[in-house]
Image 1: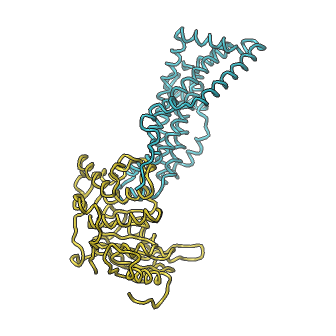
Image 2: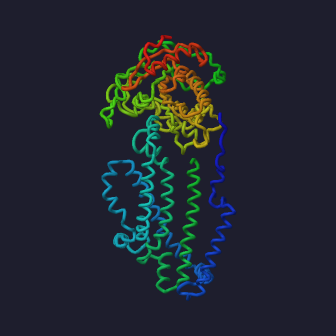
Image 3: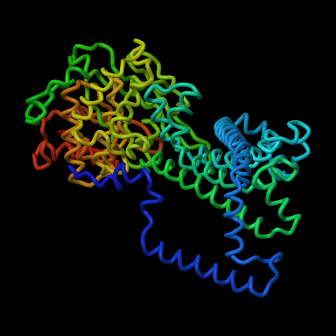
Length: 267
Length: 294
């Protein structure tokens, strides 16, 4: 009898793997990178007028001012109100459609021409529909975001399900699993879950990028704030809110990665 | 039909065996059963190959009695695995039929516990999760399923039966090949099948592990009273395990001969009678004629 191999780093290790597991060498090198970038930025800002490139310090001040005044929280609050439903709906529908079409060859063949036609349409091109169907509001912006999340999840789930081993399905059938829904639930979705979760994670990130696009037609939020500041040549504000977007993305991504790691502890 | 169960095996499991009976429903062996557990009747399988039709199997017929341990051996390319898949209901035959308990096999059924060479464990499930997979469906034995506590106990018993106590919460990636195959066997036994159908189950593990698994399988067979149909290309393995060996030939894949192995268990390779069976089966596989009778 072979001995039991180590269980990775134990259950506790999965809780906050991405934060706790930062190794010191990478942390140091990363800090060097940030410092170098800031130095370059600062040097460049010395020879440019502030409406072209404000200094890091100026951006920092603006960031603080926006945070202190409550503007920032308001903008984040608005964006979250369409980011969350947009990402949730787009992800759910994308995964469902990807799993369903990869599983059913009939549905796949029926939908193939439509899928291939709609696939290349950038979410931004659908702004007209967003306004017409939902109006200039959170629902309209959520629609744009959902479209973006949909395709990423669709293809990730589709690929994941296509890769599910036929042998596992044979095993399940020989153990009495009958019917598509039962097979999907007990074998297909869990087997494809690594790909599906990677898609969800990519999609969540993409949704933050789409926040700017989704607010272009007047819905308030981080993106709107960036667009308005751009029009007024307030580059420091633009950069401050770009930073906000990055931080929001980072926060969500770290949380999702921790959850993903725990869900996929079996790998 | 010989019904020697080779009681020479002094497995530690025999001493404190409490779980064996719980798994097996019918321990009577030998001549009692009139009907065969498994009947393979004139099974043929033809493919369209690039150079004309390929006759992978032609007119394959044999029976497996209740409680019997039958090995199916043959040279590579004789259609063993195709036959295995047809019997398991995973593939359809071009002609002929397979019966399990006199019922025609139309597709995969939990009445057969299927074990593959490559284990095919569900990697996202723990050992217990894999073993319990077939019990979660609720429809076991058509009795509306078994509840959580009973299921837990059954899974525990099976994990113990295959010698994996202490590994119940491990994931397949943490297990060696031999341990994975033990899980696969326990998973197949969980739904209390009438037949354990195995395709080269020990082909992917090292020699020592294979030997250990072979004797453990015999223990399990003895304890549960299951009927076993075991596909292998390893003649020694077949002689060691089987009550009866079905020797296949290729082009087209067919049954060449059926040999009763009339040796007490445990069987040793060094034994002269073992050697004679071995040579005879090997001779049949190589297509030699006029090999001496045992």
